Amino acid sequence: MPETYRKIKGTPRKEAIPMGDLIPLFVRSRGLSPGLNTQRIFAAWDEVSGVKDFTLRRFFRDGKLFVTLSSSMVRSHVEFQKDSILSSVNAFLEKDPLFDKTCQRVGMVKEIILK
View 1 (tube, rainbow, N blue to C red):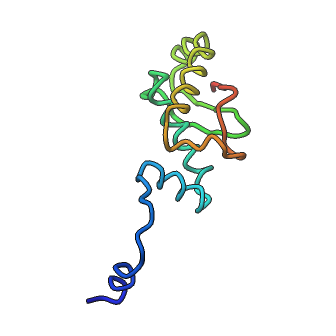
View 2: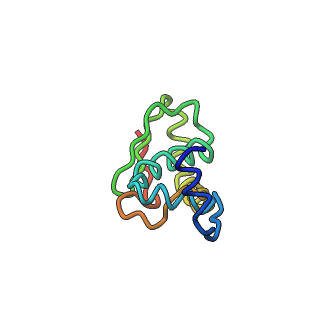
């Protein structure tokens, strides 16, 4: 019998933590929140905007999401819907259990800038 099993078996049981609560705690404790938040913002853009196939590059800094689109016609169409898309992206992030709303470096999207 391995030594680690004996140690675990002999210790008193503590209250179990659900995996849904454990993963965000692990992400925060390891300092992974800024990177994961950025990836979740990009996923929210792809899900909400409807122009995933036309998106060439995405960059996030200081609350601003910079998006480069491959078509000027799509860009002008999205320009008219920026406020609606911004609200939808932030609503998507609010519901996302992996998005750390307390992260100081990478928070909610304040502005979308199209290129």
